[in-house]
Each structure stands twice: as C-alpha cells, then as structure tokens.
Image (tube, rainbow over all chains, first blue to last red; front, side, top):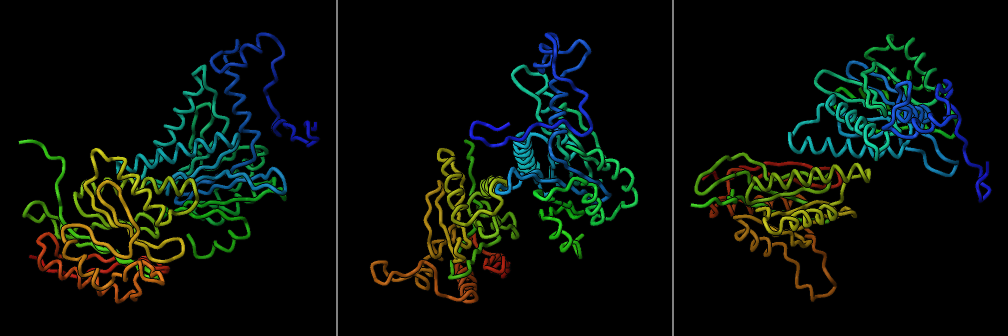
Length: 257
Length: 218
C-alpha cells in the first residue's frame, strides 16, 4: 500500500515456516497479548513469542562452530538500490563476535553494551572477558526486559561466537532470555532450509575453517542480488578477520588460517 | 605522619618530531627516594598506530592513565571503524588529565606520533592537561638537563622571522635517533634518577620500531 508520498512500503510477510501465532481476535486475547507482564490463560507470555517472531522475520544469520574456529555469516539487506547494506555482524572484542537477526536497532544497542562490558572487564582484570560469562549476562539482561512493565523484550536474536582456552564456542541468545550452545545454528527468515543443510553436511567438515565458510555460503539458500554476504572467521590465534564479500573472501582463503 | 598519595618514580622522557617520522624515548629506571625499584620498566605505551605516549612521574598514575586512554581508544575504534589520529589522541589526553584537575594524575607526558598528513608531531603536557604541539620536548627528572641541549640542536629561529619555519626538525631519522642517544647519555651522567637503559621508539609510515641502548647503571 503506498504511503502519503506515493512510495510503496514493504509489507510484513509471515515467515516461511508458518506462524503459529494468530493475531488477537477477542477481548481476553487483546488483554493478555499486549503486555509482557500479563500471562495468557494457557500459560504463555505472548509478547515474548511475538519478539521471537520478529527474529524470524529478520534476514538470515548463520553460524558454524569448529574446534578452533567459529564462522559467522549473514545476508545483509539494503533498503533500496541506492542505500547501504544493513550491518549485522559486529565485533565485540578481539575474541568475541556476534551476528544478529531481527530488529537491527536493538542489535546495535546490544552490541554497544557487549563492547563496553568487554572493555570494562579487560580494564579491571587485564584479561579477555570469559566468553561464557558474557552470554549469561546477555541472557539475564534479556530476561529482565521480560519481567518489567515499562520494558519490552529485545526484538533481536544473537548468534554469539567466541574463543576461550577450551576452544571455539557458539551460543544463540533469544529475546526470551534463553541461550543454548550450538555446533551450528541459523536464525532469521528461511533459515529452516539452511538448518537442514547444515545438519546433513556439518560433520564432514570438522576442523576445516575455510570449507566451513563455503558451507555457510551454500547454506544461505536465499541469495538475492541486492544483498551482500558477509563472512567473518574467528581464528585459533584469537584474531579477528575482516568482513568481505564472497569473491574477496575466496582470494583471502589461501595461506590464512 | 600523614599519608601522601603521590610518589615520584623518576625517569626522563624525550620526543622529537621529524618531517615523516617521530622518535619517542624514555629511560627504563624506576626509583623511589634514593633507591632503585627496577632497571627494566617501560614508560612508553603505544596508544594507537600513530600515537605513542611516554610518561614520567608517579608510575601508578601513569599506568592508570594508559589504561583509561587504551579503553577510550577501543571505544573510538568500535564507533568510528578506524584508529585515532595523534592530534585526536592529544586532545583526549588533555581532557582526561583535566578531568582530574582536583586530584591530578601525577604524570608528566609527552605524546609523539604522526599527524593526519604523515608528518611527525610531538605534544607536551603538564600534569593537568595543558598541552601544545611542538617540534621536540622532554619531561621528567632529566628534562632540565636535556631541554637546553635540544634547544641548541633543534630550535628553529625566532617565529618572527619569515618565511615561517615548521615546528618539525629537518634532521634525518637516523640523526634524530643519534641525538636522542647522546642526550640521554649526557642526562645519565648528572641526573641520579636517569640511567640503566633507554628505550627508543620510532614511528614512521612503515610502522613502529623499537631500539634499546645501555646507559650508566650508577
């Protein structure tokens, strides 16, 4: 439907997996669905589920964890041919990176919070923030937003990738405050196909980071011309490599572990 | 018998700016009173690719100051996607020092590096953040012995003379490094707080290089 200047606005499409959530159609639903601090009669907090729905609407982010490397990939949308691409992968510290899907403004805000947390920890303890601790702090923060009447849940899912003494790790943080460790995971729209592909192919590629990046490429089944694919690799030597599009990436593979 | 929050750990810092390089040097002796605490302590901190800080004075305050500036620099890099330039770092250091105007960092700083055009720049500070861009500077216990020598070798003629001369020295990089070595050797002769070793850091467009030269140990 065009807006008052005659521009066509994007319409919200339901996620490919099919939404199990229906818009409220009666008075009880209207009351229970609109407030994160109100339970529904069936024992659900709909605002949290709607927030998770927002994550499913965002463009896809994929991550893959190996023994010494973690790979983050995302499809970066551009609003139009003339605009820049949305930034979805952020560096939080030399050993931690995140990819987001959903409300990217919330994602940018969270990445700023993560960065300042890492800096403060390093300032006090002169060592890198233990990655697992960061994930838990993030999850607690998200939970707080689900239990205050003046707040709303974050509308962004985070794939947090990091390195510590025990190797490389990947966690997914939900708006609900839940977090799980994954070997490989995808969030965002049309991520189901990528999940299935990764489940099938993942074991054959343990320990080979560059091939894992190609795997991420192929798992991204929804390549559209207006979008750029960004790949980040976490190296075993705790250094962060820079973003690039696919063609640049293949040039950089040789010789860099 | 009251508590004195400050102590002076001695030491001397020097910086010289060239047309496309900057030399920052400091001795490595850390002392308290008439005793030596260690002969091997670095007073030089790399804040950014083109900004090197050398500080003498109370090293606990110096360490805290270095940590604060490094953390602020990290934040800057996250927000702007690039490193801070030396003039930007100079302003940040000034603001950080003045922030503690009423309980100062007991740190006498010399900031050296390359400006946005690639020319050498040196900024000299007092303890509360007053700063100025100069062609060369020295701070610390040996500075009163070193500055007159640098004035003699490097000082440009009066700014009233035309054409106006740049603050940077026309010396070559190797000549400037030799001058720094000579100047520290002289200071170590008479200043009891300066000696053991000089750490010399040279910044130019190909990167950062470090040199060490032995000094009198007495």
